[in-house]
Amino acid sequence: MRKFGLFLFIVFLAVLWAAGFQAQAKKIDVNGVWEMTIETPQGSMPPTDATFEQQGEALKVTMKGPQGEEMKGEGKVKADEIEWSFSFNTPRGDMTITFKGKIEGETMSGEALMGDFGSMAWKATKKKEGTERLIYH
Image (cartoon, rainbow, N blue to C red; front, side):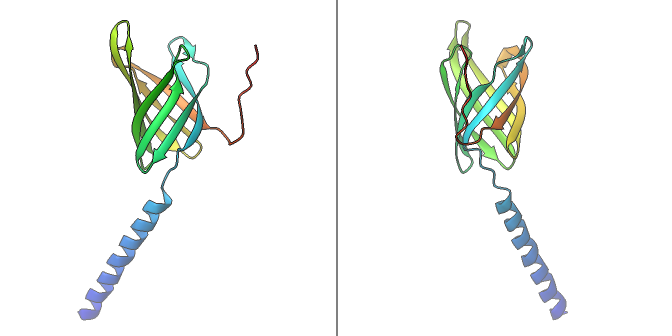
């Protein structure tokens, strides 16, 4: 009986160790610049760069708004899920846009919840360091 109890204890410790190892292996890092596209009822918005700064689960996001203004938001990353929000003033009052999605390696996608305006799909791809988008006039 003692041997069986010792065996169960060793199995329990092995399961705990494996779960901890797997949790460490799944840490996701979204730091950097991502090229985002938002699908609107009028079609895709031109891609915009979003800069993500992640510290643990905490997230800070900076991106350009529709009129070129800089928008700053905060959110979180937990496992493969990401969420952040921007709040700003409009002629119709205060508005918050909340982005929710899943991270899959160098890509992520989800929905942008736009208050009374419903939701829109979005997707993003991580930009490689040193790449810049060329803009032709």
